[in-house]
Image 1 (cartoon, rainbow, N blue to C red):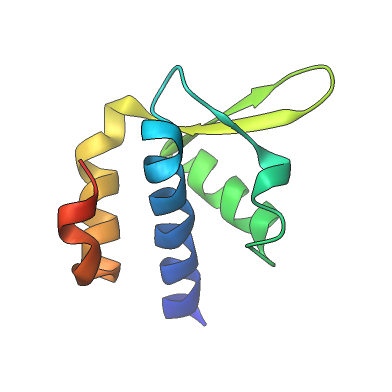
Image 2: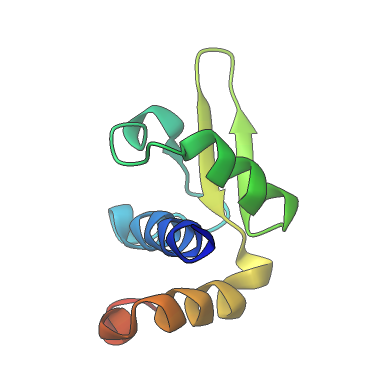
Length: 91
């Protein structure tokens, strides 16, 4: 299960990194866009936010997330470790 959770985290961060040219820092995506992809979304978001890898933006009508620029290298390395075939796709 732990490996599965790691892969789900990596996949979620990859999707954020690739969406609209990358959701780093000032760019963010609504959380509702990811609910259909991730059955454990709330657990993943909570875990990644606690580690400081993602930033949660609370708006009056929705919640959005983005990747934390301060951990960009760590995030990319984590994704590449879990999915080596995606190595050339993220920057």
